[in-house]
Amino acid sequence: MVLKLRLARIKTPGGARRHHPRYNIVLAHARTARDSKPLEVLGTYNPIPELPLGTSESEAQGRSGDRGAEGKVRKVKDIKVDVARAKYWIGVGAQPSDTVWRLLSMIGLLPPKYLPTGEQTTNALKTVRFPTHDMSGVEARQVGMSKGPVMRALEEKGAREV
Image (cartoon, rainbow, N blue to C red; front, top):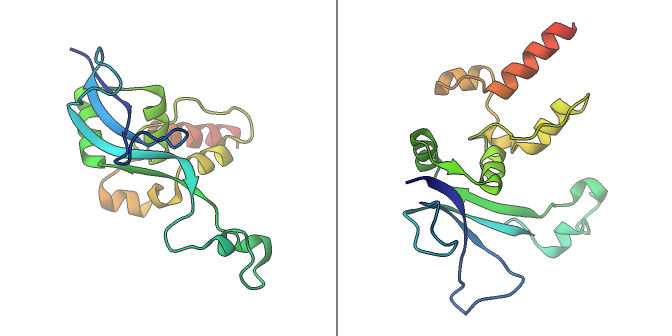
């Protein structure tokens, strides 16, 4: 049977809350319902942007001190994934849905499915990936990772243009 990595809506303890979605990233059979019992829960996703822990509303609006526009704290969407299990299931043949593919490409597990074309490709890749997961050069060799197909293609394209 085909296995899918997809999102399943979490029911909150206080009852279902409208307009406050939270999702589990789950492994399930392709033919089961969205909220049925999954084979494995791999992580969580909160699509509503929230302030990082430890920041106040005044810091988010840039009112603290003389920091100006540079001092603003951005709201972020929360993605938590068990990377080892996600890599395992993708390696075994589980097929991620489009949304889960996008989330996994944000943390660097999969290459982005849709790439922009033109001069802004390298800038777009920088904004798609989180800086904490971007390993290049010596760090990637120490961990034992090689550059992905997207980065190799960009390097080859840059080498051809020069």
